[in-house]
Amino acid sequence: KSISAILFVGLFAAVSSTFSGAINSISSSVYYDLFKPFLSSKFNKNDSLFFPQLITIILVAVITVAALFLTNIQIPLDKIDFSIASFTLGGVAGAFILGIYFNYVYSRAVLYAMWASVYLTSWISGIEGFAKYVIITLSLTTFSLLFFGTDDRKQMIVITVIFIITTAIFQYLPAPQIAWTWLVFIGCVVTVIFGLIIERFIRPKSVNFWQS
Image (cartoon, rainbow, N blue to C red; front, top):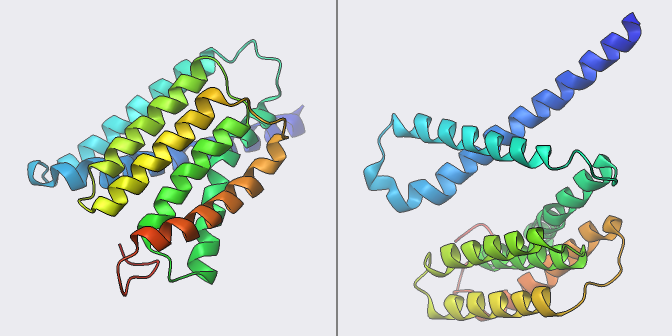
């Protein structure tokens, strides 16, 4: 019993630390990448501590509520975990390859390619029902932030085309029967290909991957 208790406590501690790090990372990213650039004039030093904490509380509440609806599912939780992670890991791997082997690619081209990758891998995974409209809503939010976050006409056109095409595919075409284990590879390939294509349309002169 003592060995079982030690193993359980160790596993619980590992999960708690991973969850805590992920939540803090997300809340910081949301605050510094989404809120602060647009409302920097209205924020002070105290707000830089308060708002990430508020976002953390909201995220924990949302995740807790979502977990309550997953009590009767028949799919193993590890499969769900890896399936969700694979949506973004493919895009991250593709961005890494672009940064290492194609460092002339404009950073915004990589960002747009990652967005398209996440959207398309969500479609490939066969998401249906309410979750499907959640993904579309998130993509619409991303589209709005990217579209109004630039004043370059070429980038606006590219962002609009990506959103229209990916939304049409996601909404009207049936999802292919592909195992979730392929999603990371597919997302990586999509990010690299889209990044190289988009870069040719929007890259200014003398700009590389690390410049925006």
